[in-house]
Length: 304
Ligand code: FAD
Image (cartoon, rainbow, N blue to C red; front, side, top):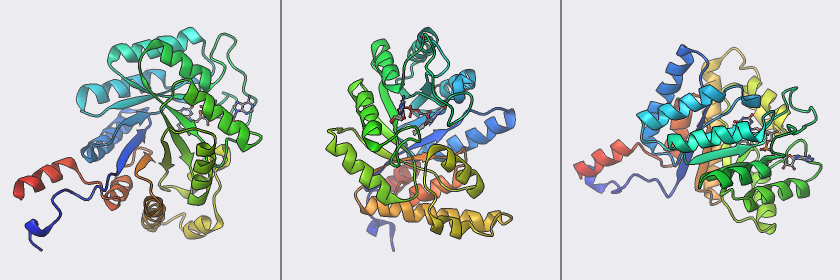
């Protein structure tokens, strides 16, 4: 096939992607993160987000990573921020620092109690009461884009979906403009949730959070803490592969490919990837979605 007979633009099909990274602890991890950022940046993500460790434990590292993204790349960083274990003044000063640094997008979260998931949540006596309260506080400081969490299988602390959706609605009414979901493996749960969200009059994008299963044991562990269901077929696929990372990677690619392909067939065009600071699998899934490096598109256009 000649270059001229190829489609003029890469087949992005209106797909938008964003990537989540975590702030590195060591020089080696920093190098790995930057390799990942450099690999994924040409895919022209809508934004890249940087997580905030439980109770603000990565406050400086999150800030430094966001700042480096701003200084050294053309990417739009979104800083995660939690309000647990911090006074309003402390949280507000982080928000003001972000505004001054040029950050315009915050992923606003309550966070998990420092005693661990499952422990009763108690707001800081001088802090924001919950994520909705935090959203209102951020909104009062600057005209940020604000993303918040959403839970297709409901948050483990929610007694029912109605309360979960009330909290989501309060966050949106407070000024959030996008929800990003907890990871899930059963697409039907996502669509069932989306129906409930829309039935509750919530119109913002609810972007599916996709977690490629690089390490099945670790994912099972995350899932048990955040209430995500691991379907038996998924466990079956990774069964017996604990000592076979090569095959695990192939299976992980197949699983993620199936998930995003089905989401796309059912109309989804925006995806948020939990990269775990690993680029290759996410890059491959994006390729499958039709998302191509921008330079390749530019080079291609020049060739035509
Ligand atoms: P909220 O939206 O305030 O609450 C979540 C749910 O809990 C609500 O839907 C509500 O139904 C229920 N709930 C809350 N309070 C009560 C109550 N008093 N009674 C009954 N039900 C209640 N954690 C980090 O530490 N750092 C991060 O960077 C981070 N990033 C995340 C990004 C995404 C996209 C997601 C989905 C989660 C992330 N988390 C992060 C995890 C998050 O902090 C935890 O899930 C936390 O337990 C809840 O925070 P939230 O903002 O979702 O809380």
